[in-house]
Image (cartoon, rainbow, N blue to C red; front, side, top):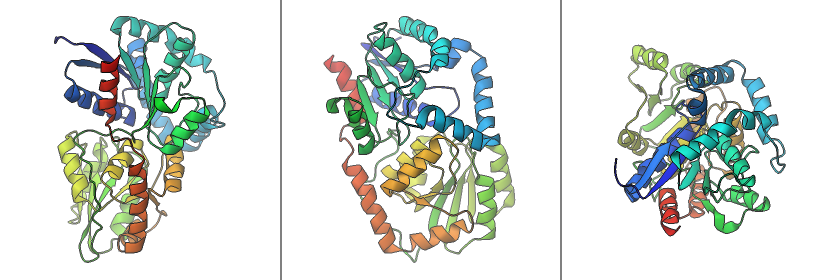
Length: 374
């Protein structure tokens, strides 16, 4: 073990490879580069408190979304998103997790806790309200909205993706100096493009199709459409995530203009793919969208999972940061937009506007500097 000065504890939730973990991993990697003397730990309170039960719950959660999307969406909207200004108590979560949260903090004794999921944030906010802990807490939001489960009152800093979210927090009584518009943090190997190169009408467009880390969503239905309605001058790269069946299916088709990739853990490879592409067809998951905004690439949404993604989609459309596709003849729609220079210029204006509001200091540096100043 090294001689560490201070400890940063990261709290995502569940072990599935979600945006909560991706953001935590990206920040951990960056913090260890910024200041190797800082020790970073990552814990999932469900696995910590209940062990193997976490795997069952994660599997149930994914199957629930896939099998009953409307029911999940309704419950999500009514439980955490409806009337975001109201304060709510979640007594079941308090009963299930508070004792484990206190035990975890006593064991790790962190100098700061970073929440990339709302449930740990709620627990910690509650413990601080009751003066049971004094540890500084940072909320790092991984979607384009804030819902009621997030702890707010006793949180020391908030890293938000948008100016609109900053305004909402200020309406809730958070001081401006506690809020930083950081975007949704991405891995330091995803290099930011500072200028936009619009695709040329004469070239063959390279379009990435992504179903997220889990390769779920309507990607198979989309694939049928991609094969049956294929305009010339398009090369497709399909990211299958951890969906091995999907990867096998596409590879077995042996179509020369479609290239399939399994889950890509290597961030340099991911960065290279982003640089090569002219556009992406994806779901509105926070991290993928954030990476594409950093790359200043046109984003096309073909499907949104219920709950978070559907709400993300509404906000992203309001900001003018995505194109929402109709279900049929998807590639024809993408191709016609990529050939429309004025439309792309308008889109890039919205991207530049978004970038202009983002804090110039990287999120990992903000955390490191804050710890050094304490």
